[in-house]
Length: 429
Ligand code: NDP
Ligand code: HSE
Image (cartoon, rainbow, N blue to C red; front, side, top):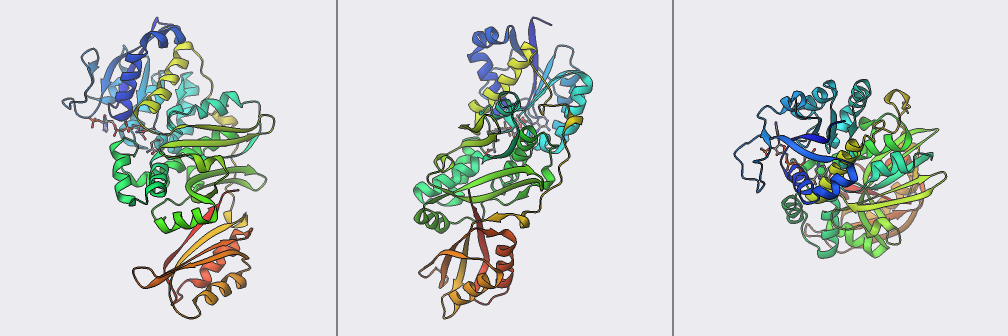
């Protein structure tokens, strides 16, 4: 083992810059913990001339990012470019093919190609580590893969996108407009290069599929995640939720069992007494239930330069120590292939919000659709007149089959009384 772990760093944006700063600021402590120094020797990004507020003079600049994989002075490549395919994936494949270690924060790439990369790492007997890919600075991959390795875990859920949580909690605290808050999240470095990945729930779905695989021992199955983001959540939903004793959060839920693998990202009403209701700003949190350890609750910063770089450097320290096992806690070929579970077979309590024409019979029409579909209403609120002359109806249902709620909404499709699409949020239990 060389005295120094030599790192090639691809990507010098929010996270890449953070890695340089963490390794410089905590150099001696990291060397003592790792048992040897961790040094960046070469870096690569798109634009060599960009002023990044970083001193890059001690590192070799590599124009062709892929060349980091074969660079003779590089032991481990850190990929912080982003994107599920393209240069990030090429670099990842080449690095592992060259028998070198790969550390990445790229959840899109791991969600789509993680199994292939894990197999390549096993073939090359090289480390593959992606702690930073899920929940930023929270050591949740390590917590589940190593700390909870003795347990059967059948449910894992949580808040997995810092940008959405920042937006929802700012809307809740100040009633500010969605667009304003998104711009702030982008300025703080939380959002993806294309923020649609955040607000449409795709980023959280990437993370949930990785988390489910590590927790359950099942093959990653991103395509099986049912996804709905927060675009349709309006200030009135947040206010109604508060009045009913809930907060709105984008929550990912994964469960495995006899019915297969269930994975969903959806805006949820979280009871104010639940710990997830108190996760604010760019914080993330993950809850897992192990059959011997019981419930585990992980919370911390889910995005941003420092927390994400902290997780990347933790992976480098493991590699420097020679401590790395299979990326998904077991060899890729040992992972089960669980069939996706149909959500219609599940039971739920639902929050439904309709914008309706303020006229005689509207409430009766909605209530009839619910009754005919077999949905039992727990509470119903109608509020005033909207700017367009309509009214808002918010309903909370008793627990019942999801297919009944879907059927009720289907009955109301095309109704002259309902304006636009109803909003459906699940109530977290
Ligand atoms: P940024 O957009 O800030 O940085 C991306 C970096 O990649 C830039 O330095 C850019 O170069 C470089 N790059 C882009 N395209 C290429 C290319 N074709 N060839 C070489 N270099 C390229 O992204 P982040 O730092 O925010 O994110 C990096 C990764 O970390 C992503 O996978 C992201 O999902 C993940 N992540 C991010 C978190 C966050 O809070 N920001 C949290 C957890 C994970 P240049 O600067 O020259 O344009
Ligand atoms: N865009 C991501 C988020 C970054 O907001 O959570 C961290 O993965």
